[in-house]
Image (tube, rainbow, N blue to C red; front, side, top):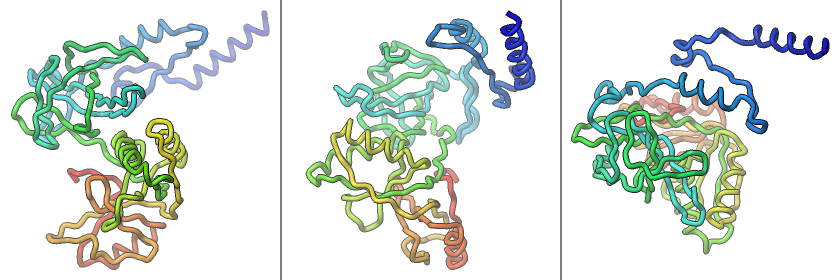
Length: 318
């Protein structure tokens, strides 16, 4: 017993030294993270965690837009697509767009304006999820998350509005990958499945997809942050789309979006080192793949007339 008591005292002392006093203001400001101790396997501490999580979770908050702040109690419905997931049910090849409701009241089958395209979209068959279980959502309010079957209408970052107001929520920035490979299908007869797979996986954000200007669509350049994402890409293309791929590693280590304030600027006219590669992202924005920071500096120095800037974050509002 003395041994167990001493161990307990040591553990408590460790927690006292390692942790800070809970301050909900700091938690809500993102400056402090609460930690719970428990075990789902033994069902120890699970219920207290869930109860405290509900108490501590913040209520819906205001959101920044291109037209000011949208409050959660605004009567206008507005939402934000923050995740897209393909093949959630492999037997049906379904694709879900997850929407966080930012204001107003969602009603089943309501029509909204998709701000990126200016088109009206009917939000049919809304789903809410709890682990593997799904339930039809008849209505939802600010702070709720619903999933909508998506035939390819949505992208991550899309803004949905029920009125004729025109604004967009702050975008989710796209960060530059650091590992690159050229990818093509082993079997050219499966090109259609290959194109569908890489398009859907890039829309999820699993990889970043680039194409070379003037080159066909048989091969693509893929970019990822972590090298293991290539293994995930290869596995999902095989298991979900029945496509085996050939992957060729490329020497690039930096991707930079090209910006120039000059009218009539043509990225194809840039002067680059022989080891740099100009590609286009899925929005047809010019991106240069570099092997080193030296090559970036060289490109800036040799394109002074175009006042070039190379950004490592893609922000269409920037």
